Length: 200
Image (tube, rainbow, N blue to C red):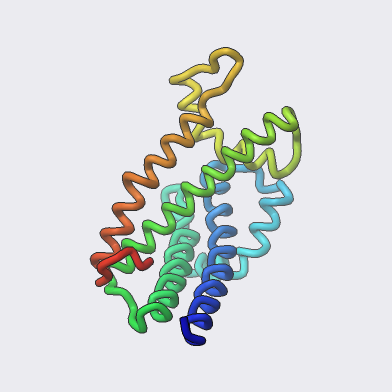
């Protein structure tokens, strides 16, 4: 590995770090809005403060419609598209073909949503074992975010033996989506982008 490769890896790392942190903030805000979480919560207020400067600009031109925050969706697509484009330029010296780039962008955003839920469900399970009944701004938002996902499972499969099986079932379902939907979508996007292997 030559010096150029080290610099390229460092560049990819910094691009990924910067973009993913901001993408995470915008995605969390979007998901919390979707489930109508408590926006007086300090965590919600923090997310609003750091995402408002960018979203305020998008809201001037694109209104929300049908109860969906389209400016946030457009910002997520734009940020992820730029991130993947920059990484492709560093790795190959070229931008991916537009159709493949779009599919890869969608696949990576869907993957981010799924991983957010996987991590939150695991954290909730750990907290329930270590400190059941714990209350904090973070646990409140985690509960509000995962309730729409876990509630239908609890209705279909009620707690048995004092155990709530809904987090376990949700984790299985989310991982299956990663394997059976997101991975093929990424592979298809890479093919359309002009890559023979999964590059992005």
